[in-house]
Amino acid sequence: MRFPGSSGAGDSTGYDSRPVSSVFPVILGSHIVLAIGLILPSLLLPFALRRGTPGAEAGRFTRGMLWLQANGTIVFGFGLALTGILLVVAIGPEVLTRPWLAVALVIYATNLVLAFFIQRPNLRRLLGAADMTDPAQEARWQARARRQRYVSYVMALAVGLIAFLMSTKPDLW
Image (tube, rainbow, N blue to C red; front, side):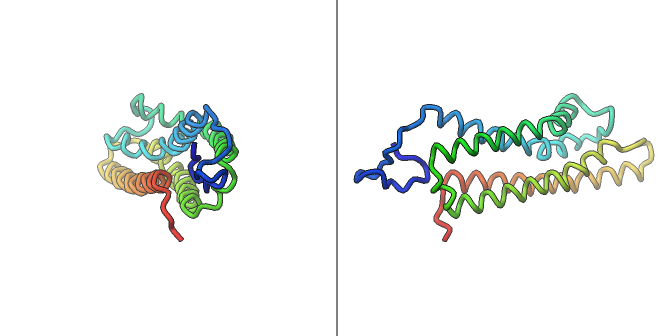
């Protein structure tokens, strides 16, 4: 069986001579789920806040996403590192020389920086909003929530671009 990213140099038929791991699809699926799960709260929370429910009035979904964002980061990050290492071992280190992977990793790292240093703190401020009885305060809150949704659109586009790069593996240079 040909491994993704392999050069096929294992034998004259173009197939890699390394044994195929029966757990490769499980590792790959886990890696994808963990990668998306790491930034999912930052992607979805601005849309959950669209209804104007800051603070304690936030719904169950919003509170769940907040909990996941606050408590799941270490678990998701560790799981990603572990499954990433296992994928490199299964596929082979030559996959690390592929330009499409380098571009996808840069986009993912940029997305993580955006999620942790821009999206996450601003979401916390939105949820910590005080009394919304003042119309001016509510208008400012709505404008801030709208900006956060725009950031989420950019993050979702980045996730889509990563998925495109990972599935098509284009020759970039």
